[in-house]
Length: 344
Figure 1 (cartoon, rainbow, N blue to C red):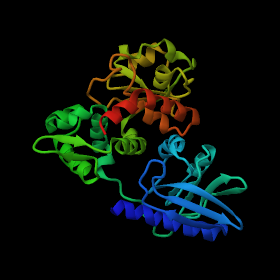
Figure 2 (figure 1 turned 90 degrees about the vertical axis):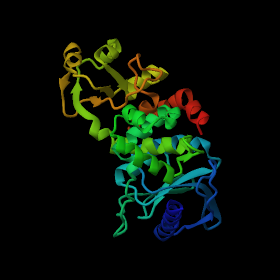
Figure 3 (figure 1 turned 120 degrees about the vertical axis):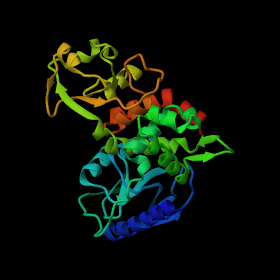
């Protein structure tokens, strides 16, 4: 309820500032619809004898991964969608414009392109005293490891905490508070003695995808490299080096759609032999990134050198690249949609 009230205030504040900034009328006609076709209400924007209606999706904050998720969500909405949030930075404003995602924020930044209505404002500073919503522990590194394990293995929710801790590679105490957060946030419930059930898995999945690039991924970084041969990865059996592909290479193998430009490798092993055999060299801005492998469970592609599809999806979303987002949508439909629907 607290989060719902916060989002409603964000919508109201953003619409008020939009009116003051542009001279258009902007009203929230319907709120609390709570439906995939119109998640946070319907906004009417009017000017003289013209009017436009937009489905509203409100977010406390927007990242590159949020932009990717929003781009795919646009396909589900009957009306044109309008993303409303507290503050959009200039780089994210440019990204949203590039992806043709309409937005307004409480600082007066906006992008709407619904001819003859066109608005693009960026660079307005956030309100004085505006503080970002503190990140829940569940979406910090330890909690993200547990959520990742549960998303990949929903049946594990009924395992002893000790088993969950081993699978997610976290301390035993981390599991206890993670489950308390899951319950408080409506992602988990207990049905009788010793019977647990995950809830709202789709939303939990999206929250993980948004949080992973900022909260967990930076802690996994090991080294960057570059190679003279941009296609070096095509001939490499990465599993022989105790590693797996993430990001664009994994997506290319799963979808046959992408031509990878950046390469992500997950491994817990020393990578000297991989580097030597493939003539890689260290580079601070290289397009080859080696990250720590952070899960301890088997999955469909365990022995095929491909990271879990949930992680590949998150890697793609974090780029903000339109083609990568399209590939992420393919991966979702082929490998993730069934898993999530079966465990809702």
